[in-house]
Image 1 (cartoon, helix red, strand yellow):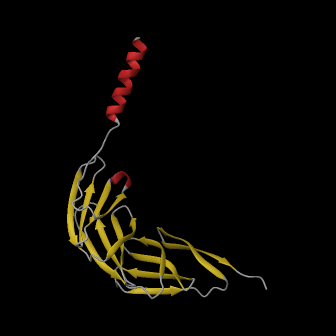
Image 2 (cartoon, rainbow, N blue to C red):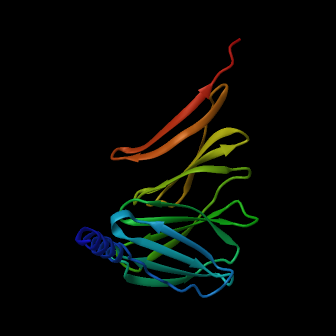
Image 3 (cartoon, rainbow, N blue to C red):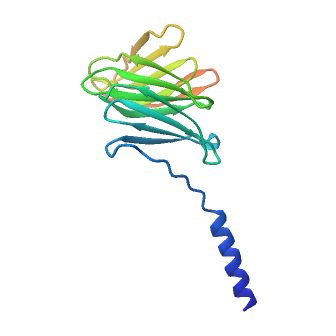
Length: 192
């Protein structure tokens, strides 16, 4: 009987200790909501209303709201992708009926953000997105050919690169390293 009582108290204690939960209210029923895991630095909660108001909340690792900020964005954008480099969260938004993307650079330390527009080309289908304090790279394809878009923070002007490889070529990965970008391609050539 003592063993059963001991097991009951241990399980009850562990059950109480394991329940960390935070409830954060969302204003509208039709809002787009996205949660980005910052690993040991907590979470970012993104709440976009149909009116174009984006609420950004930083939740720390103890599940407390560290800060929150609001910004106006077009009501015609949708969340597309995000990239976290350890200091900043880069949020890529797709504009409806446009070839351009909107980029938000959000500091995860304090409530600050920057907005910019990325101009692409007709027919660009994005498949890879990486960013750092030095710039942004979008990888994808145009007419089934690999296509890269680089935007350096110093100039903020996009640079476009396409491949001239024979055969079927795909971008396998786009990664950041200490030396810069590492881009891997897959190439399949037909034998004659």
